[in-house]
Image: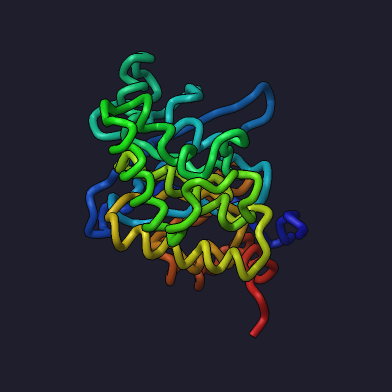
Length: 269
């Protein structure tokens, strides 16, 4: 997909917020700037991520989505701006404070990041061993319950190598929610999956949000997924947040780059 802007496109920096969404913000990003030498990756990015909803940051590869995610969990420090998670600004927090905030997050990595030498259930139970005082039997019961929640009731003892791509993503999601976090971050959740499996994962994400009330934050270049699962959608382009809106309004945006991205990413009717 070409990511060259049409000649008529004028990329401008605007400031967005979700304070009219009816939900308190789980995360507030204000004036976030990051550059690596002469390469500006994020430029004055400002928006709120509403609690209990699904927010998707859309954009082509190399446009700053992963860098934004790293700032949210405090793995990067911005050149300017702030990232508030509750009353903690991750931009200036101590490492000890960052560690405490990270306990409130779950993470689904792009390729699952499962331990290949452990069973599916042991992968899900892994965080419980190091972050709780539960017994081995209690850890197994809780991991099994999460596997059932992602519709994999019979795979606890199955080797990770025997799982399909879609099953790996489900196991990774079960692990991401096993500690019952406030926020789950998704890095390209449909990467490497066929369209049918991708749609199954999208439906599962929807059901998880409704069942658990967790805040989901997704970064992706998958337009179909963004339109299917999101409450709010933003688009990053060359470091700028060029659009930010409820999903229905985003779909009708007149911004030329949004129109180009949607037209290339959505199937024709």
